[in-house]
Amino acid sequence: MNPQTPAPRECTLLILEDGRILAQNVTPALARLLLALNPKDATLRQRANPLPKP
Amino acid sequence: MRLATPQAGVRIFSAQVEVGEELELIPAYTLALSGCNLRCCFCITGRESWDARAGVPFSAADAARPARRALEAGQARSVLILGGEPTLAPAWLREFATHLPKKAPLVLKTNGICSATTRAALDGVFTHWLVDYKFGNDACALALARVGGYLAALRETLLWAAGRSELIIRHLLLPGHVQCCWEPVAHWLARHLPGVKVSLRPGYWPAWQAARQPGLGRPLGSSEAEAALAIAGSAGLNLIP
Image (cartoon, rainbow over all chains, first blue to last red; front, side, top):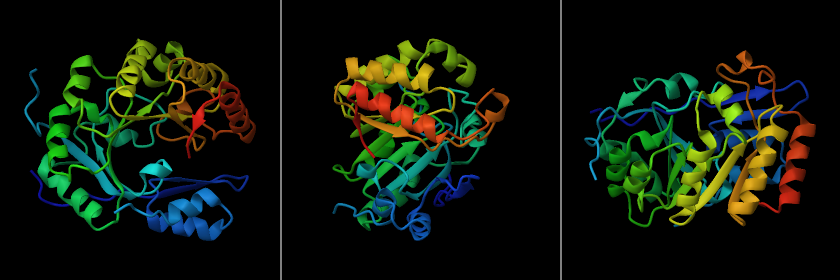
């Protein structure tokens, strides 16, 4: 068995010709980047700043 | 009940904290197991999901260690196991859960195509079942995921899971399949699981072998997303972000 930490997945973006941006495997860092591009997106704001319960 | 040998053949192809899942679950420490029992042509992780030999073998204890750390450090609210199809490794999942804090939200992300024996083996292991309801009819399931008897098998799992855990049903909107897939899914949910949490996902990505299927080589249109929301509204579904 492998004692290492499993490898992280790549985060990938797809920018459509109509300006929509699709994202896969969104990490907190990527969510913050996307929020900078679209600061009015309320759902994205929640993803960029999720508050874990203790 | 006879279970497979723990850890046998379980491989992991990714693990990281993610925030793309349902809001009530994020941030989630996600762990993706290689291998799947479906062959969805649009699978976003098709190479690893279709190949049970992809990734790296991990014992349940080793895989749980970073998940536990993420929970304890406040980096994750939940631990989410996906694939591939994780229900192919029920014994490994049971052991994995024993290495996490008892009250930690533990989410099984599954396509729902599993046997009654597997469901029984996983009874009480997960706090949440996050089940994909991908297709609204058996013909689309056969054409796009090469699975027969899809609806009967999937619905059996949904009705079982509804009584045993927090259930969230996810539907990825497929271009050209709003009427044939989403609409019957919405009506079935309204009738058989009223009030269940439904996560409607508009972010279809034409990945893997999708372009081989007529109509799936493009993203979802805005009008299709609007039509899908209207169907959800008329069915009275409990949509969650």
